[in-house]
Image 1 (tube, helix red, strand yellow):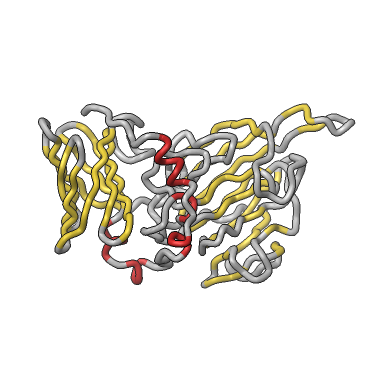
Image 2 (tube, rainbow, N blue to C red):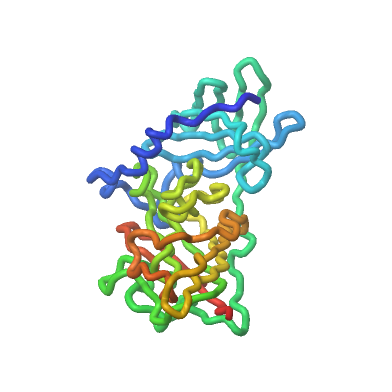
Length: 326
């Protein structure tokens, strides 16, 4: 299969900056039951094309419009080569999504995505639902449980919504009362389904380690994986791989963080270092953090709280615990 370049970078950058009034009023769904047929169609598909494993990510764009990425080698984290890709646009008509692209055409009917490559083979993929292997991970005996759904004792700000930690409460976004320096962290998050929203208006929040290094929390399902998309560390590094699952999926961050080191005079002598897994797959590996990122509550690169950003969207968190290290 030939590689197909994605749309120009400028287009993606322009989409990422969109936060228009229309986006702010976009339909927002917090459950699959209310999300409708577009939600049922969007998601991941997998199968074989001859001897080649294939995957596809179907992004709902609202009002029966879809963007489909067919990936040679399989889904992200499950074999995708990061280069073999076919992009198609789809329109829902009478329960069937008809697909058309420069290299292929096809349709989605029920749980089956059928592709006919122009001057090539035809194949079918079946819808699949993946879960993070660390979803529901239990806190070790020696961990500090920051949120288990019962109270906000560990936090300033935040609110409990259906047993989850929300960021939109009247007391502000949640920030832990305690500060942390060296630690491992487990956190689970869920972005809403906002099919008509674009870029930064689509399920936006952020996980700020020590209140100053932001790892993006965003519905970036199917996107390239820039530093301002899910898993990116803003202004520092894009993720190795975009492992974002579809919206309304519970997803996991597992973090190993070592804070910056300072000499006796307070001068930084070593950058902080972080390794992060998104949905069980490593997206940053011993990454050096040369500076704080914008939007946090501090920038001294010393110990600080965990901060979960309020960016105006109903992103929920749960099962948050931390293990401090020397």
